[in-house]
Amino acid sequence: PYWTINAPVATVGKGIALAAGHAPPFAVFVQGGTYNESVVMRSGVSVYGGFGAAWARDGLATKIVGGPVAIKLESLAAKTQLDRITVNAVDGTVASTSSVGILVASSSDVAIVDCNVQAGKGRGGASGAAGAKGADGKDGQMGAPGCESSASIGCTTCTQPIGGAGGASDCGR
Image (cartoon, rainbow, N blue to C red; front, side, top):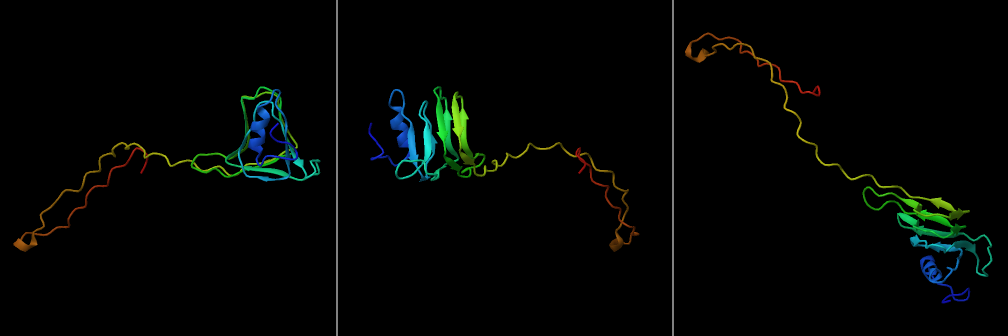
């Protein structure tokens, strides 16, 4: 193989890609630490975390901090396991996106063992489009009868009438 315990690769994703190139696929052993990457699992490649510098499982936390989908297991047909990994997904990045710690889709024989998974916050939806024009309002009421009010030319004055009330809408406004 291209890597050994004496020459490990720097990312979980690279380890998975190398392990998947073998028949049968190798497992990937990950030392404790934080790995800032989104991971796509491959069929038959199991990932085991919690290893110390001497490659013994000594309780060191192995943490993957990924994007809005931190780890994806999709269309996997062979036994695939994720073991002793802490997973954190960042908040959704654009409107209407979710935050998913581990996404499993269209896969069989998948095991998630002793993992701590935390998704971030999803983003709010995009603003909706403007609504259609509403129906026209109903006609207003009739005003009071008019009268002559021309005091400047000697005609009698009267109180000017007021107009009728405005119309109502179908929704009661």
